Picture (cartoon, helix red, strand yellow):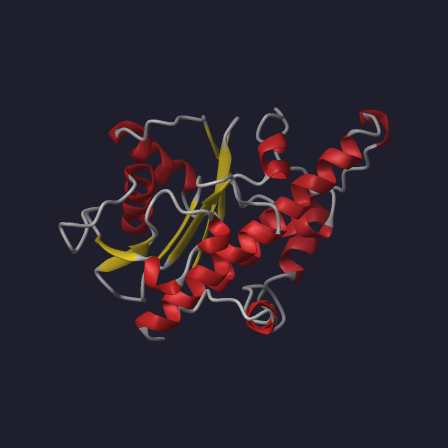
Length: 239
């Protein structure tokens, strides 16, 4: 993958997050690095998700400082990214966004329940952390700790983060997590006495089906079609 291809994937991810209800005006982020690179790309704070283009991204060193000292970056984006990349060498993309379904579940003591197919990839593979908007050093360390080996992290009363080896994988799990949370809220609205929660054995079997027998759910099948959808609309995200 070239840097331009990565930039286009990043811009497409912002556009798709907006399309699927996971943008929040100018808040949230997608950051990504080329595998093995000692820098990553972030967007300039203040742009809306629907207008971000490939040329907008700026390069940031792994210590969180801009490669070009004249660039201004959002520390609430670069500081968590720095901690996650340091803790997870296999991770190349991080999405932090504010999908309303996930924000709803973030306020529930039960967290995410295995109530639908979209929830199953996260069964026993999701972390939780208290909400905090200041991203000081202690909190940054806690983000990396609570994310641990998981693919997703829910910030209580705040938002979520998902990670992937590619932008496509990170978006795939952001989409699945938001669907899972929206379905859960609808199910729970029917009343707790009607909620049928599968056994741990059933939930694990559903989860393992996403990552077994030669099939791995990583967004690689879905991502080209999402990009074609943007291309068909004459989107300028590649510019």
